[in-house]
Structure formats: structure tokens, C-alpha cells
Image (tube, rainbow, N blue to C red; front, side):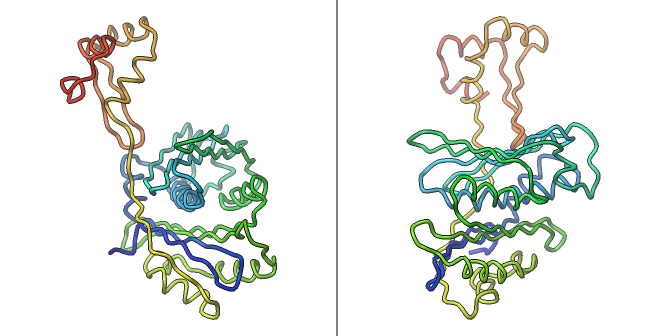
Length: 292
């Protein structure tokens, strides 16, 4: 099994601290593949992808997590969506020029980070945190401290392997049901901060953990595969069209003769002509409509 595009969970036997390690290659490339982003945006998208994967692994339920950056800078919006099965997708929307070496603040401007948890059963929860840190990881650590009162550290790396983009990262978190010694957590965080990007990109998880914590006892769980997966479909687009007023549908059909719905996440196009729209309104969503 490939070591890339996997999430690993691990725990320290002698400390009340848990960890995660994720390495993303193909998933990151597929998220970027539909767009021509400036280097700074592509770099931040990789960080967001890693962070969302790590956060998704902290979920105590089956469902989804959405991590979203919003602001008044040239990077208007960046969204990563993932679920407990580690299916990931993401997109960025840009309005303006972004320099190659732009910082998070320069790209987003006055903005905030929104984290939305959507369980399959139960109520949705949304947390908002200001972009007070210099890096995305700083903002997310503040989120955990404010929302869950849990000491958390994220270590995110982006770069390249054999000329192809790669992203990876690690998360350390105090275990909520146990009393942790802050000094133990700081000790482990200092060790983890020394991890190199190429180690995360190219080495198996057990070797990375041994290099970092060879004097500590660590239990590593079986990995979970991570993949790019978009949840768009022709049926979902048809359902969305049903929510539009009659006059808006007619205006779109008169203007363009059909309605072309484009998915920003994967680049798919779903085209509906007048007959399709009529079928949708009659409540018909059979094979003839869905295979157009």
C-alpha cells in the first residue's frame, strides 16, 4: 500500500496525548488540477487540505467538516470540505492580483476562519475564529483552545516530491478524557516541530514517528486512505433548480437556451435544456434526465 494519501492516528503510552499524521500527494494534485492558482494560493490550499484532514480525524461522529477562509482581500474565499471517511475536496475564489510570496494576511485581508461540523445525525455546529495568527496553523490552534479548551498543535508542510506538489502534516492534542501534564505536551510539541517536509513526504509513518519519538513509547493505528471525491451530481443540480423561482429559470433559458451548472470543485458541467427543466418541474428524474 502506498504511503501517500494516508492518515495515521497514534497515541503515546506514557502521556495523555494523541497524534495524527497525514501525507497528501495525489489528493492535493487533484484539488489543484481543475484550476490555475497563483503559487501562494496553491500553497495555502495545500495547508488547508492537510489541516482539514487532520481536523476531520478528530470528529467523534459520522459526518462532514468544512473549513472556510473569508475576507476582503484578493483571496475572497477558500473552502475545504472533508468527511469522516477522508473524502476531500476544495476550491478558492480570487478577485485581484496575489503576489507569489503573499502572506495569509495579505491574501485574505480582514477576515476570519469558519469551521462547520455537520453530523449525519444531530445538530450542525459552527465556530468562527479571527485570523489573529501569522499562519493558518496558529489560527486553528486558537480555535481548539477557544472552542474545546484543548491544547492542540499543528505542524503543516507543503512542497514538492520529484517535481510534483505534495503536502503533509501532523497534529498533537491533549486527550480530553485524561489529565495531561503541560510540560509533557510541550516536550512532545518541541520534538514534533523538528520534522522535515521531505520526511513527511517520503517516509513511512512508523519511521517518521521513530525519528521524532524514539525515546517514547508510541502506538500507531492502521492507516485510513485519503482521496479527492466530489459529491456533485446531476440529481443535486436538478434539486437546486427546483428551488429557483419560475421567472429566473425562464430568464436563464431565454438568454442561453439551456442552463449550464458548473462544479467549481471538480470542473464537471451539468447542462439542462428546456425539456429537462420541464421534466424536473413535473417531478421526473428518471434515467433519461440524469444521463444527459
